[in-house]
Length: 79
Length: 183
Image (cartoon, rainbow over the protein chains, first blue to last red):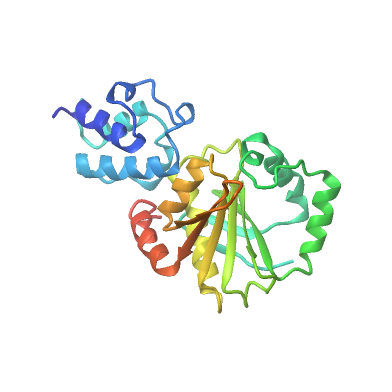
């Protein structure tokens, strides 16, 4: 599975959305499925799938698909 | 005026003060907050002042301001359901609302005030059970409460969902949340 596929899969699981909806236009305040519980599931899923541990400030600031991707890149994940 | 100050998981809880009343009233009256309240009536300046003055003598409830990195982001409160003081009641009903403008409303940080406050409520001498009442359409709040360990208990004739939290379930939920909210 590619890194992009893993990222899409994590968003799809956490927000309970179709994989087609997990794309670069997905933002925290524009998707009703993105609530505090989904945010928690998303972080747990990303940290497990990519074997990374985010800084807590980065966790709280993770507010979009693009932001998640950028953070993972900072942790050495290549897309 | 209560003198309860609590902190943890990145946030601080402090007594609600007169200078913050208008800010809090604006949050409480905002449609994004009021629509999920059991009592959705508009609160006037005068009503808010009378309510605040009445808190001075009340021992059955507690209202604290939530702040994160110096920014006021919401209010958390608790009230007993039997009229006893918080220290003497076995069943307490907590509530929470965050500023409609806050970017933390749907963030994992929204769990921080509840984690700190529920810890405090369960530390009170007699408290055994926390009860939350949620409108059925407020699915985010139902999920939020379930993540904190609450379970659904009943639904009344108006559809209002009553959820119960026991200490053991809260402790398990807290472990899970603390793995991510690692301040």
